Image (tube, rainbow, N blue to C red):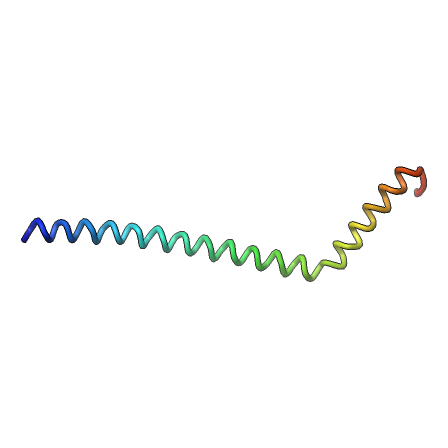
Length: 70
């Protein structure tokens, strides 16, 4: 009977470790998910500004190619 209890305790310890690791991974996934959502919202809110920056950069390249601009 003692041997059976020891085996049960070993299995329980292994499962506790597995559950602890799973919980840690869930917390990491929550952090990553939050960051991804936050980044998406920031990009979505600033999409016009980003588009203007890209257009400005393209215009700067054209100016550099043709020798125009300031």
